[in-house]
Length: 212
Image (cartoon, rainbow, N blue to C red; front, side, top):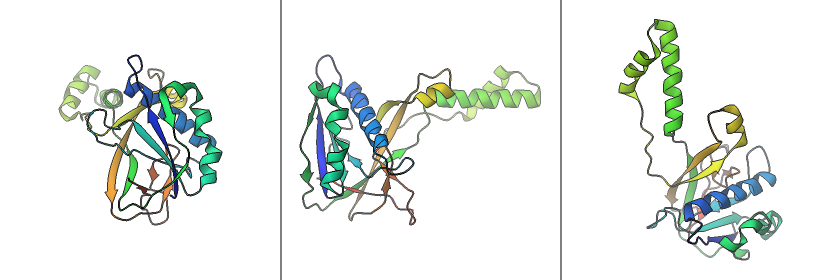
């Protein structure tokens, strides 16, 4: 990744940083889908230079990375964030400086409380139908082994129309949990349409972006 473009989020008293992240990252995702190279694969990666800082855990900056200036020009992220122009500052495409650290940002699948409750009721209905006991009794037994939904990883809420259609009880809102792994050397790989490292290359390694 030789070039990057930095987006700074500008919350105010009416628009919180968390809400702004949700809107900005949703638009970035749509832009990457529109410019994807294959099914859920992107040549553009994202980076979070203020990851795990005090305050909001993703900070206020988002970087887009590509191996050429032309790919970031073609993406034209300003167009996708046009409606958020009052709340974002987008720098021009820059050359990545010399760095000594690389990081991998990947999606970590964590079950939400809503998902856990759904699965608990599915298991209870199945157990009740096989054993003849009531659903409430089955739920009481399952409660002892109920998993928790806790995770300390930073996340951004996203919206999916597919999820909303599949689950009538859902509004399509779900969290993307983002994990950072620091590397000493860069590692080539592929990125998904969230701009995150996807373990889908032949060697099974994750892809990195420069950290500076």
